Image 1 (tube, helix red, strand yellow):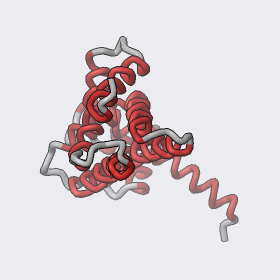
Image 2 (cartoon, helix red, strand yellow):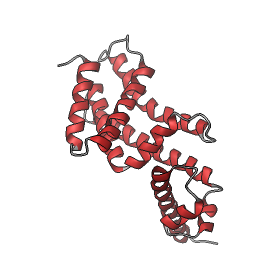
Image 3 (cartoon, rainbow, N blue to C red):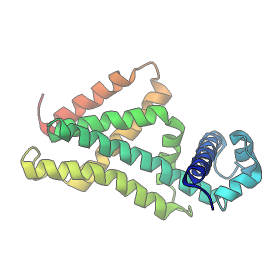
Image 4 (cartoon, rainbow, N blue to C red):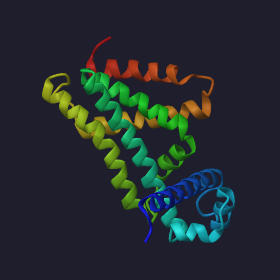
Length: 209
């Protein structure tokens, strides 16, 4: 029977392997598309045997589905953490949304290839992982919805706000603006991009100048 320390090391090694496979897959698929990317290429890029891919994932499609779940999960966690930190500091909901915008930009700055893939996959309808993608997308948007609902309840935001649509618009704003930044305005700093989106947030949501 494995000791707890041995099991822990085994689990850590497997998680590290899965992370390498995620990174290899997202890089290759961003470069050449899902259909053109082979399991052999993913294994080679990750520095593992082909059998290791199938040991961790039943197929290339399962790997990509888990990649989407993993990546959007990281984004959702970062948004939630930003909102919770703002609340612990006693800040208002506009400040919480602003902190979430920055957290989203930090995530996209770190994982631009994943973000590009995620946004592209949102508009496809013939993928086996479409239902999973919709679920994880809603989990991310729901974090923003929660802050908006709290703001409406506290009187910080107008009761006329369409919470689901506003939350989706805020998430979409960050995703599209960040991709534009990375592709067409890479000379801008993260602080510069955050400041621009922050001013938009302050004017459009809170009504402050």
